[in-house]
Image (cartoon, rainbow, N blue to C red; front, side):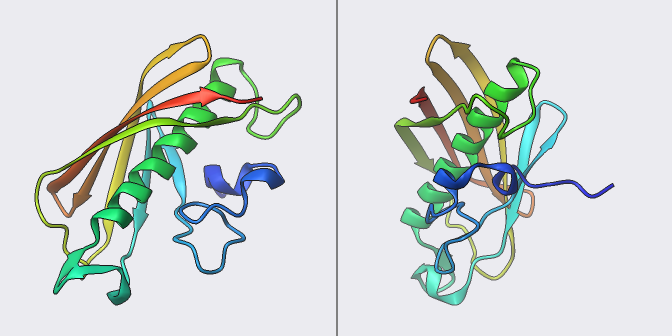
Length: 150
């Protein structure tokens, strides 16, 4: 059985996002998957994602964390209701706040891995923490508060 990425299960309104939209040919097109109680995505930087020689741009890092964590929040909302992603009635969460801490420069010559976990689901808010790794090195961490819009 082939696993489907969270991003490949969304309804049309989420398909154009720069970070995770599968139909945005110029975007990052990350793919996130459940692994137990966390979501994991692996993504390969391109040479044009550079901030300075050899290091990934901080704005790209923030986008990766934002999109991976927001997809985690949306998928967790469906999971909490015992439903498949994309089933009716639709559930939609967007970023209400994002904080990122840059711990070390992130190399662009190898894939990065994102790992996210839901910290809290309360009312219309879901808080998700996310870490970005290059190999075994944690290079950045982030947290989002996702707000329900649908």
